Image 1 (tube, helix red, strand yellow):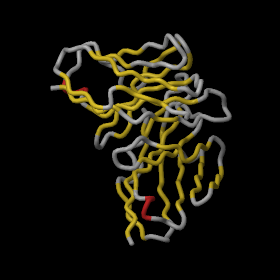
Image 2: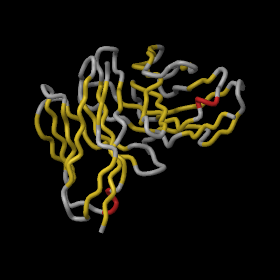
Image 3: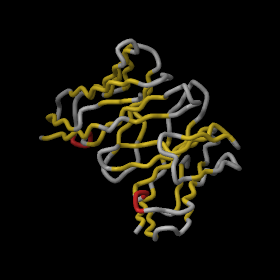
Length: 111
Length: 114
């Protein structure tokens, strides 16, 4: 079967660091995405990992371990505007380029 | 401006009345896809297309049709809509080469079927 898990909700304080985890079990694997989605808006791309390790992009970093079926998104120096849903998604790879999204993590940043 | 456009943005319709939601992108992307988003279920892929005349089913294709006659357009067709297709629909596109699979999403179409 195919399954992607993320925590449903998280709360963190402005200026802090938060780590959002994602675990996956899919038929194939061709890479993992993280997207940000503000309420009422379309998702926007944050990162794409296909190899193991950490990729850093400004305040956001994404980590992948293919052997563990695990990824995390790290947000540093949290700002109020980071309050949003964070979506983990996997490119399945066994059926052309099917993309499977997790349920999303709703992050609330509080003062 | 590089973008994905969808029309209409909002639609209320009745059961059984055929409808089409259009999607167009101006980035010359090969890959296009349709998703629906429902509370608690996240984004689920309906259909995707690797290029013109190449389409495949996602996880929830039942009740939907698509076509890809031109590279820029990827319409979603509901031949006989039912209330369980009430949802928020997103179209997305991306390049197909391995350097960038970033998907660009349209603004969404909120569909209500009564």
